[in-house]
Image (cartoon, rainbow, N blue to C red; front, side, top):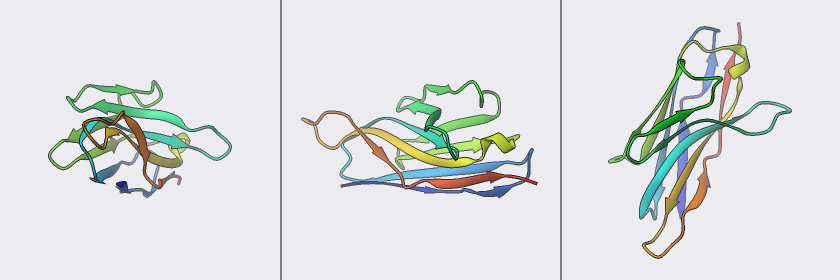
Length: 121
């Protein structure tokens, strides 16, 4: 059993900042990558940022230069620092983990329950 627990969402003014956290726990053998996706009302879920276990990040073009993803392997935790937030960043943000639960297991995707980020004046 693997759980991803997110925190840090909320309401913020345009131009403001928020920091999301996601801690993975349970039967984890190895984490290959963790990341953040988001889904706005009426839209499909999209990748925001992803980072490998060795710290190589990649970002959606819409957040480059404003968002920073980081990982703490000792804590199995990924962070998303979001600066200069815009109303179009409003969405439910989901944590994703690509990990193995055993040495003979294949990589699987695990998801958090989602945290709402609202950017509005």
